[in-house]
Length: 138
Figure 1: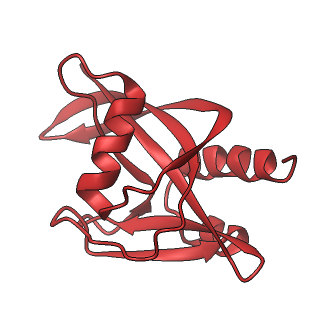
Figure 2 (figure 1 turned 120 degrees about the vertical axis):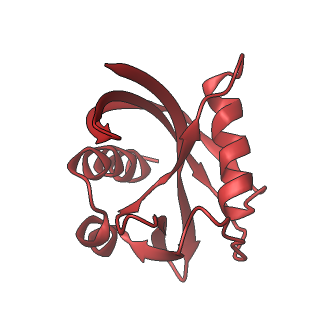
């Protein structure tokens, strides 16, 4: 079994008094958060920043202190089982313009309830709920 590590950011924007979260549409058809592989000697936060810039063009990243959560899951690729760990950070952005990489088909900003309906994977729903809960305590 192969092991992979990635890092990503749960982005949110405050739009007309509502907190909206960013989801990306991947070519396989699922909707998920911004994330990518940790390369060489990168630290997880460095990866999250780099991947965010590459996948969305977002450079305005204001991290929320105290949020660094990890999820794990398994998937199959080329008949091989892969164990993946992803570390997520939570960040606010005021940047409206998204420049998608060719790794994604679309993006959407949605309020929490609509994001929970659209996001594909249960692990992502769990991490999004933790992020939303933290935002309500700030």
